[in-house]
Structures are given as structure tokens and as C-alpha cells.
Image (cartoon, rainbow, N blue to C red; front, side, top):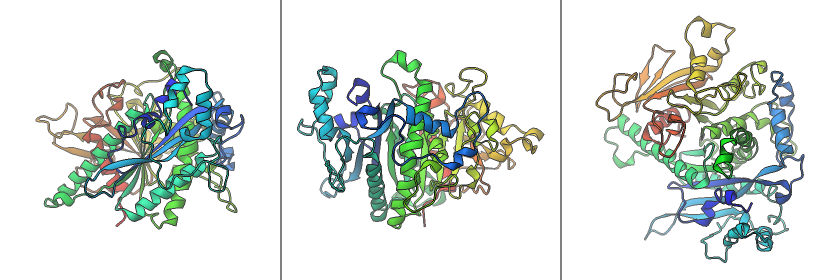
Length: 519
């Protein structure tokens, strides 16, 4: 918990006034530590997870066993385990004389008396660097009024139970979110998870870009429908939950070899704490507060998209409430999951577990009554744009090879023997806004357009209303000006080009169609 790498994933605690959300919401920070440091024995899962009979029906292709049962076994036997490090709240103050968005901490593992004791006893100066994470050291660690106290009494957090403490902390976060939804005018809960090699400060900047572009795109859409709506056009008023996780190794050389390890960590993030939050804690708290109709929208990028897919695939592993039966299949209240340039296999959605090394963990996605999935791919993405590893390795959903395989036209896709047509509904997005000439290969009009590949290329722009009647995964080619450029400071060419208003327009169009605010 106290290391140079660890610091990169709790930097918010060093700069609680500097690193902040620009929009009301929360940051849920996860970190990973040796089991003996966080008091969870090897072979044990976090207390809210269990094996589910639903997983027994999955039989991955022989050779490489990556099914959901194996994912749970890997989590249980990993020498390290994910735990909740801290939860920060960002909310408007009530001081009318100087309105601002300020922060407080719902939870901070570094305030545990046990962590402070370990830091002070350490002979390692590098570890003692985190001794500055001390409430008496001058940092503005303002505890939220709802924060639980440390101790061994009822309703308190034991100082050394860092994994076990996560469950009441996540439930407390969900209860505070539900309270905010009931007392404020938020239209959506927006959960965002970033991908590989994204430390906490960068992730928070990305949360602000994604939420901010969505807010602006919602305003554009409202103005397109009502030209004189003025400053009152606020159809999208999200309550943001940004989730950060330890998505890189300590050294640049180590990072080169960390990708496969971090794919497993992304699955653990999704199967564990994200699963608990979105599939159990939030729906229970929102129902109790009478706000269950507020849509939960999830946006994930790269390995963050993988984590979201794992959260829904592993939903049967959540322990039911006392006296309730085990979940017999996938379940989730999430209304919309947008998986941008995903670093996971499209075979997760295959109907036949023999089509997948992972046992097709999302094969029953069309039975989910609430949840719609959207994938994006781009010609400009060179991170997911080729095969990773030997010939048996799968192509990622963010690659155009996968899109072309899923969306190929003609008799082969229409044949009953092809599952792609049964699983994927293919579209194309383009954005020529502000250009004198359209991008090469894009549609010959200005502005943003989303076009249906299967319906005579019917297209709509901002302000249009889409209706997608079937339950298939929407698969969007975003190459034409939407996910197109090399984002500053990133690799993989267009892999990370998701922080411009063009992606905001695509996300808003999808939310407006598939997860509109309650009326």
C-alpha cells in the first residue's frame, strides 16, 4: 500500500484540492496489495462473492481455460487482492456567497490507525514518504459527515480489515448516491472506468472530459430540437462515479510486459468491486430511496471496457441477500454500457461457449431486461487493431478486423450458421463538424451523423431520435472523425481519441436513444 507505484493511484489524497471532478459525483479508488497486508487469506474471495451454479454450464474451448469459474479461481489464488483505498465526494457547497464544488472523503484507508502504525514503524524511507498522508500533516482531509468511524463497535470499520471494509464502504457510497438523486435534479448516474496505464490524476482528467463533452452534446441536441431553448437546455445532468484502479506496473520496462497481467486485473476489478457497486449496492439503495428509475450508464475505455463487461458477466457470483435464492443468470440494472475501443474479445457475446476461450460469459446478454451494450471500433486504433500474440489469440472489439468480421455483409452473415448477425447490429458514426470538406471516406454532409448499416443506411444527426427495437449489441464504426486522431500523450494512434466533443456526440446520441432520463 505504501510504495512509489501505489502513490500514483492515491495521488488525490496528496492534492485533495488540486485533483477534482468538475461535475458532481464521486471517485471510487481501488488498489492492490499482498493479501497479508489487507487481511485476506489465500484461496478466499471477498466476502460478497461466491461460485455460482450458472458458471457450471460454461465449457470453454479446450486448450486455454479462461472461463468465469477460472476467473474466480484466479482472484482467490492471486497473492495480491484488490481493495477499496478511498472514496471522495465532489459536491456543490451551500455557501451562496461563493459557489464552488468542494470535496470530502467518505472513506480513506490511509487514515486507519493500522496503516499509520505500519508507516511509522517502517525502516524504509521510500515507504515513510507516505507518512505525509497524515491527517495532522496539513492535508485538507475533510471527512464527509456520512463517513464511518474506525473501531470495533457496531457500524464501525475494523482498522486492519481493508478488504472486508470495502463492502460497507461501497454500500455507503451507493446510499449517498441514492440520497443525491432524490434531493437533487440529476438525470443519470454515469459510471466511468479507464484502461491500461492510466494513473489516478490522468483518469480524473479523463472523467472530466467525458462528462463535460456529454453535457455539451446534450445541450447541442436540445438546441437542435428547440432552437430557442436558451440556457435552460440541460437534458443531461449526470452524477458521476469515476472508478480508478492500478492499471500499470512500476517501471517503463515492466509496463511493456504488464498488459496480460493487467487484463486479469481488469477482470478482477469488474468481477469484484464494480460488480458489487452497479449490480447490487446501487439498485438496492436507489430502490430504497424511490429513485430506481434514474438510468445507470457505464462508459469504459480499453481495459476499462473489459472491466465493465466482466462486471455484468460475473453478476451471478454476487451473494444474494439473506433468505434470497442464488441468481440463476445474468442480472444488472445498468441501462446502457458503452465499451469504447474495448480490449476484450467479441466472442464474449457468442451464443456457443465452444466459440470462446472464455466460455462465452455474456452469451445470455439478450435476456437482460434492462441492459444494452454498445461497442466501438476504429481504423485509426493501432493498439487493438491487430492480433495480440499467437494465432489462437482473439481480436479485440476495438479493432476494425473484429468489426468487419462481425458486420460483413451478404449471405454469410445472414445464414443461420453465423452467430454474428444474431449478436451484432452494425452502425457507422461520422463527424464533419467545423470542416470545409468532409473527411476522406466519410459521409458528404457537415455535422455529426449516426447511420444504420442494416436499414438502407438511414442516418440521423444531433437532435434526431433513434429507436433500436431488438436486443442485439450495437457495434459502431467510429473511424470517420469520431475516433480518428492520436490523442495527446497517448499511444496506439487513435486508440485513446475519446476525449473530444465528437465522442461526446456519439455517447449522447446513444444515451438519448437507449437510456433517456425519467420523465
